[in-house]
Length: 631
Image (tube, rainbow, N blue to C red; front, top):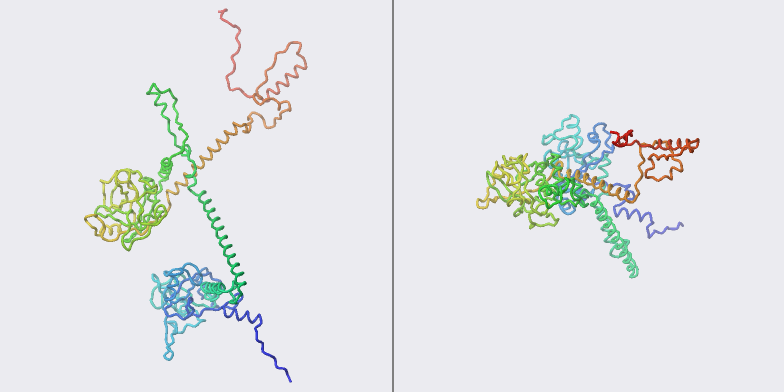
């Protein structure tokens, strides 16, 4: 009699691993892909009713279909538009909360969504809705290749089977929408929604790769593990085990906090270093007047000519070396801007349209620098035009917008608010700039509004017609070069006759600087020039210190030949006057001999080898008479 085998009351480790992977939806190494069905939303994994899609551009990996030359990947070998389908009612709340693509995790907004119009048919018995191709009347299955053709100028697209698109559009080279009859681009306006043979799209539609599902799993594990044990296994632990796990978790939190603090400190130090070595480096240095090339006379020479009380002084153009003032630094910068003759362009976005303004940075550099600085700091964003006089001008740039059009604006100090005082980039009123080349002639002249002489801040006005009575009273710094029709529309806005305030909201949405920035370019040139002069000044002072301490290197005269070698006795000769000829001593007749000749010849050789030609005129020859007694 055969023994009956008992049933196992447990699972092996392999069986347990497989079942746990199946329950959690994960597979080791993603060897078992889980493709999303075509008629399901990628966010909720349920069938959709109002489909929308977003475009994800992917590299073509060559895993196309077997139709040579007919695959859509060959139309654009580098980039292919892949579409991921969502349910409209589900994706909108998700985007408002997370502002990212649930599949890839990249930033995404509702403007990136394209509404899909898919033809459908319903079964009479089950009332089940099936999606189909409007041309072939074939239902869309999970293995069907499906494309969408985007309608130009809209966020809508018609969905067809690839078979209909291939036969009616690609083969005939007739890129016209089969329903609307509008032209479309064969690569930019075609979106692949489903293709089993496309590896990149299959990877995108694999449920194992969805980012929002991974985050849900991690949150679930953390919530399950934080309640009873740190491992998240859902095992009931004893009191002592719970205490140990709590201590471990607290230690891990402290370590993470310390690591974050260290990272923040390193980032702050790097930012400080970058700020110190930035383009405003030269402004933090001590800049002298000599570094800017400024020379002032002391006035002593002119004073001594007209006053007997002052001592006579020679003419001199040197000035006292002192630290340059802010106005002197700005004056040097403005001179550079004038020499460069570079213009700037600003685009003003209003609720009536856009206007392009040309700034005369080479003629009115101070005013243009203030205006460009305020534009870069977004001072004008959200400001309104508070004064409008027909056939004269419209003024703005200072007051806030009204009612629902109000926007938060950062002050020049960086704090948000609407009660910030009107001011220039220097925090004080600046002086006027007048030039005969800039006058209030014609419409579109941009000029500074002020409350008197040298009281310019941030407000400006644009003329509707010539205003010659404002010349030499208001600083002209720009002109509208594009958008005069918008200016004409602003002139027709009704306004209150008592205070000339527009009855409608007329405000600046934003203002941007496009093209080159003449202020930044001039600052870069000034920075290089000043740093070069500072280095030369430091080098000169260092050489003077070394020469005073006797550390400077000797400069050997060019008259000494390179091959001349000094004897040890000549090395001991003092350095001062070492190259002068030695004066010969008169010797008696008894001393004349061979030894004297040798010494004379040796002295002559040394003197001739180190002789330096004198630059003085030759000495006069001696005359025969010594006095005037013979005359």
